[in-house]
Image (cartoon, rainbow, N blue to C red; front, side, top):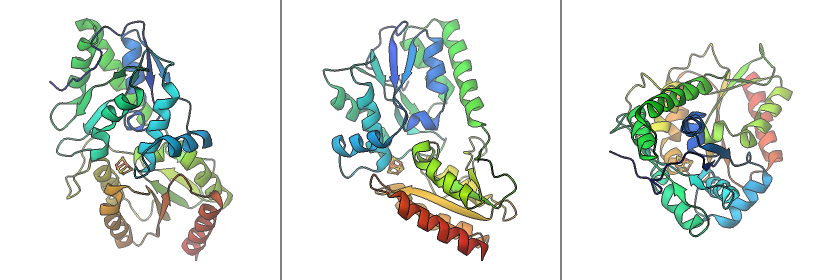
Length: 303
Ligand code: SF4
């Protein structure tokens, strides 16, 4: 069993804080629905803003990638405001694959950050060893749920996640214009703080921006063993040149996985003769510089 929860008392009636970062974007809607079905109240941290980014730079380790820094800031936003902050330990989200090693340590970092302020509630998600539904079942029972209630909570949580994952990937209102696919880890791609300025600039340039959909079934085995990298790579390898006019990959400064794999993405897209550009983001990314790069990319794509 891979349940590892700090607070094994029933969570019914408690307020559980969910940082709006990282695993929230891996499994959108899932944890909120799960806690709700166990009669707890899920409370999200506010959406990422300039203030979140500034706080992240102040309180987080300078060597972290931006998404990990942001998690620290989202955890801080919930400190003292809820009965427990939920920080799961993600070891794998795909059979045969592992998560980025940084995700495995986030629970311990949160415990240190919140020591003496707010307890951390956690569970280990290791899909390579245990299907997610079973992990949820174990977790629900450990949190005091009866058999029937937990069964219903697991079903509803998985449904909420699958429902959230099929949101239309098209962003903005530029249907019919040349299309650019935005590729990134889910916690970058689905955080509007990063994506909205890119989308609005592309719209201004009369480009339709599409967000990559993360496939969750039938993932081709590849030499990339990091789960979200392989999902991204698999989706990029199955692209058809008739579907997109360009690909923009958004990567975080100090991302170990991307630094190892990004050239494979570039090669896979180039093989299809699709224009490709990388944008690296960190807490100092300037909107002006980003806009100039987008303009240059769209110009070269049209040319
Ligand atoms: S995959 Fe990269 S961006 Fe994501 S947590 Fe790991 S180092 Fe950070």
